[in-house]
Length: 374
View 1 (cartoon, rainbow, N blue to C red):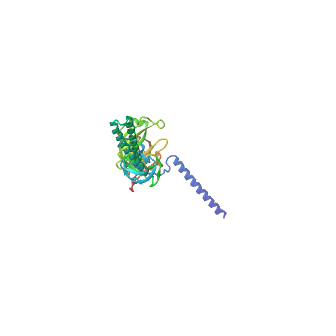
View 2 (cartoon, rainbow, N blue to C red; view 1 turned 90 degrees about the vertical axis):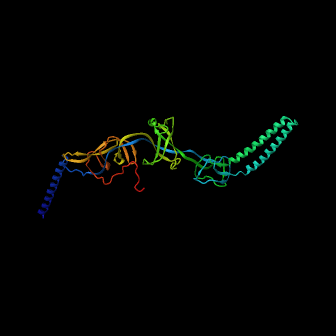
View 3 (cartoon, rainbow, N blue to C red; view 1 turned 120 degrees about the vertical axis):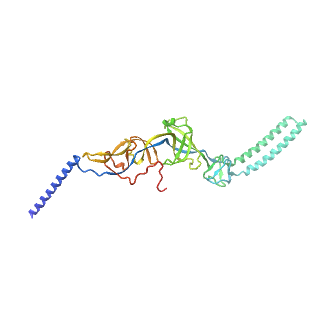
């Protein structure tokens, strides 16, 4: 029994010693560069190509109506009729709301009677004055009374007219804020009214871009995340003063807005077209490795390992980025046309890493991407 136990223990010691010897030599070989290497990383690539992009300045803007007000009551009164529907387009002068004018019309009838009587009195006094049967003072007094009566009639007509609330300009109505029979005080809101054709878009640019823009420059409002233009307009005004807090210069562009897709208060992306075209290297945004110390890409090259064996690897290259359009980013420096650049899987790479290229499925790479389910 003791001999068998000794035999088993001896065998285990020999086995452990053999494994340790083998592992030691494996580690020594790895240290010398001849050991195990990790498998290559699967990536997709694209060949960098040169493109001509028109120079643009991008900014965030807000659409603003050329004319926009909340129509309100000029004088107090009770709503007797509502003659509009929410959300409808109206012309200038269209009646929106009528306030009750029963009292004013009764007062107007009385004032008209006094005016007519004053006119008759004036005619009699004038006739007597022609016959020298009265004094000039009597004539002057009658003329003044006739004018006062006429003014009283005009005042009541103006009050009645002001109680008919009309659209001050052509535009699109908002949601009604009054009800039939409601008492309105002076200044109470009736309905918003916005003139959105044409429409303004206000935006700001850094002060260093100020010399690059001028009145009349073409401006596009683009779909968020794409280069598709919703509307095209022109810069109509540039502020003469730079904001001392932000060091930005404010500008205003005017759009015809024939499509009606721009609405007052809308957040938009603005692209100011500068006309001149620049040569850039366009790459998919997925190819860029963003980092605080600098942005970079990985370029695929033939490399030589420590064992003098050739393999396909990557070299990290820092780049200077420019404008973006759709899926693509302009590379201003760091990449030359014709170089093969990794477009997916960059997060798991390091300079010198081995890669295996598989371009069966590649990231989207277009300036005007569209969703696959659109």
